[in-house]
Length: 123
Image 1 (cartoon, rainbow, N blue to C red):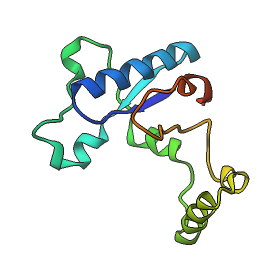
Image 2 (cartoon, one colour):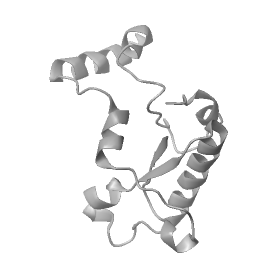
Image 3 (tube, one colour):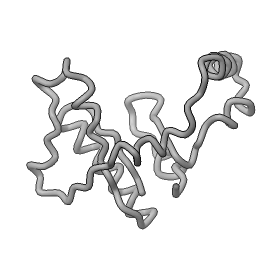
């Protein structure tokens, strides 16, 4: 299962959906949408609302439990601090043990990277 966390306006949603759909088709799995951003951030309510339903797509929404499964175990404050420090010191080997690369992927900037399709695991 691939879960795409949708944010932004209709244009962003269309791009995020298309990227998620391409990945799900490549992995031969189902695509689910996480629309929690629209509930959690009321500051964007006036302009940005979930709007893909007007495009006649097949929607499946991820449950809270499914989204939590992708986030991995909760870390303590000292573990989060240690990971942040290790990232600043570029100790990738140490931080990789806390990351779950097959379960979660996040873009580092606002440009598309083909690495997205190639790096994301099947989980």
